[in-house]
Length: 311
Ligand SMILES: Nc1nc2c(ncn2[C@@H]2O[C@H](COP(=O)(O)OP(=O)(O)OP(=O)(O)O)[C@@H](O)[C@H]2O)c(=O)[nH]1
Ligand SMILES: [Mg+2]
Image (spheres, rainbow, N blue to C red):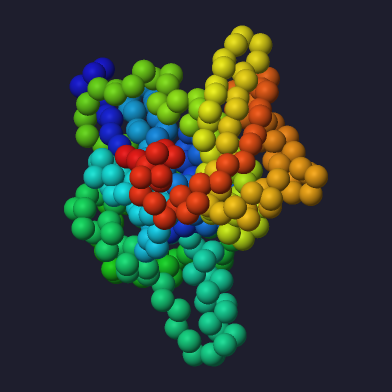
């Protein structure tokens, strides 16, 4: 059996909001990676292990590729580079909805406008790695069939892909077909992890991510982008886990915004975070949240690293 076993790393790459984390969760059948409607939700390289009898694929979800402006974003792009280096195969996720919406907008403004179908800068990223790339056309549920064909054709002209798959990560269409394609591109080898393992991140990492997800869902504009979570205490016990966490913000004025009038906003955040942590752990949780100001932490390399954003 061993000689017919395949194993390897598959990096999920693409622009912010393309649906990378939603795909990761669909592939694993479990919510490991936080996903929201806002761009730049993912800040780390998140690993998730997919196992079958004859294969093991280690998926690496990554932050969306951008031109970094501050230290936190630079750290995010280092996670992307790390995943590109570790990968045996790359999944290049392209958002069909985004180009379709852009085209509709262009048509309205200038009748003869031609919308750029291929993201050449993004392609450049994967081209330079000289590894097999599977083009994954996501959000197929949102566009007409002709649009899917058109975009696919344009990408096929621009690059030789090892495979192409249209999917809806949200509606979970095309996922088994994507796994089938991926399996054929993996090197032969034994499993790297026990087959019942789903990830190797510690529990406190997932907990901080679930709180951060609620920050994205509950607060507007700059606030979620200015904040991060630090787990100060994590006491496990058979009945209940007791967790104390700091919400670290970038400026003093943001502290009050996180707390809200009479503490209403942070209370709401706590309730929602606890619910999602409890459903992940399948266990009761006591969660205590405080706000801490770390002036301009996003801009300072050592702070960014100390707050957990290091490879
Ligand atoms: N309609 C539709 N929406 C999708 C699909 N896949 C993802 N989305 C939505 O797109 C948004 C972004 O999804 P994420 O999975 O967070 O995207 P991401 O690429 O991980 O984003 P970053 O972490 O910010 O780089 C969410 O609102 C998802 O529900 C899809 O197949 N169809
Ligand atoms: Mg993501």
